[in-house]
Amino acid sequence: MAESGVNPTAAALLGLLHDGPMTGGQLMAAAERRLAPYWSMTRSQVYRELPVLAEKGLVRLGKPGPRMSQPYAITASGKRTFSRWLAENPGKDTIRNPIALRIAFGNLHSASQLKNLYASANEYHTEALAAVREQVKNAKKEGDSYDASALEFAVAYHKAALSWLKTAPVG
Image 1 (spheres, rainbow, N blue to C red):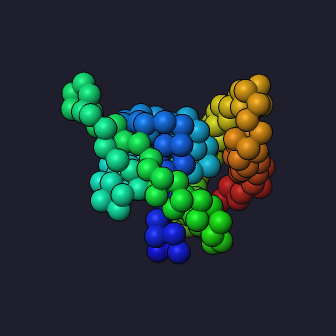
Image 2 (image 1 turned 135 degrees about the vertical axis):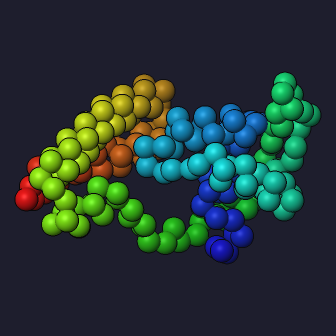
């Protein structure tokens, strides 16, 4: 665990809570909207981290709402912990690309499997590139240069993936 005592998922939740109290579902939606192009979080991770953050005093629970939804708000201690996390060395990237993993075993694919793999990967990256470009445009329009900059990473990633797919062996 990092010096701050929180993992990246917990830190992302603390960062999102700077915008105001949110339920687990609202946090998941905010993470999808703001972070998904370059950082993945699952619903189970969100719901696993929230009670831990509350136990540590980094978030506090609000009054239950409809369908027993529980809002969380960041505490002063949570803000200090998040600030410490921001100052830490982020460590090395972890690359987990399911397409590259399958291509590594390309010699065990049939020609039609490879063709389908490349076609679906091209379609995914083309659609994702268009979507994230729109997010960049919106972030810039809203004056959020930091969000736009982080999203530009996703633009570059999808462009690189599309370029790489053009050079991948077909059999």
